[in-house]
Amino acid sequence: MSTIGGAGEFELLERIKPYLAAQSGRDDAALIEEAPGFTVASTDTFVEAVHFDLGWMSGEDAGWRSLALALGDLAAKGAIPSWALTSVALPRSWQVDTLVDLYRGMHALARTVQMSIVGGDMSSIDGPAVLTITVVGHTESRPLARSQAQPGWAVAVTGPLGAAAVALREQRALRLQPLLAEGRRLNHAGLCCGDISDGLVREMEKFAQFAGCGCIIRAAEVPVAEGATSLDALTSGEEAELVCTGPEAVIKQAGMRAIGTLTRDPKVAVVGPDEKPVQMRLVGYDHFA
Image (cartoon, rainbow, N blue to C red; front, side, top):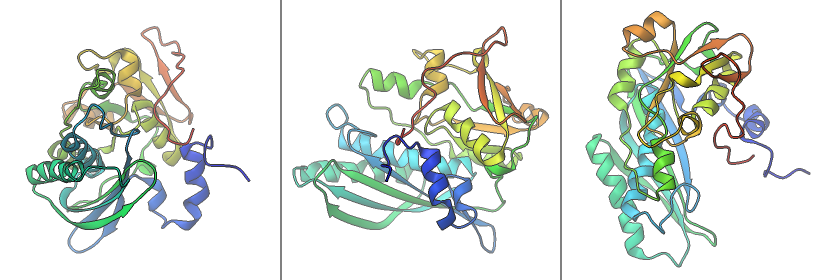
């Protein structure tokens, strides 16, 4: 029998897809049709020392950051947040004040986006703390799924990438602002969007997996955050910015500049100014690789 370690996220997803509802395996957020509109739901898990480090980050910062990343899936679908459930498994060595700070941070962000944390669960654990957040929102129009992306569509991002990688290197807490209003605007424009939770290249690999079309990313045209490198912009995960695909005319009308193109070849490639492939040792984050 094989172990989870080394299998890779995509392989694990393929193995469990037979047991998921038809739509569940196609996007990071589930879409449920109701009258009127659609409910969008997503869940994310955050592990201490993997997603947050209380050695240099406060409990409040960890709580804010975790909820912000969870809300990225709603932003990508153009949904207005409604409520959240939070479950946490804690080592007995944790300080009570740290737990309170964690929830204080989540509450502070929830208040700014006018959503409520309505409940959850709590348990003990021998290992590091584990926080799971389920967020639920609503949208009046059906957002495009990754599986609907088409070869020839342009690819664009909402802003400079790599800020999360810089903050991690500097061991500096970064209070992300989920782009909820921007996500609604782009979805209403008819674009297919995704959050950049595992890096830009990895996100485009998800489009390739579910839509069957690959991508050519023009590295020189990817906007880079202050202090970041081009490699950071291509691979940094846990970014607040969104990546969008659609006809190039729609991308332009939405005020964005194309940084790549979806292709019939299912591979994702990064090219330099000379159009030659850029060899990359790291393409993004995979929990199971």
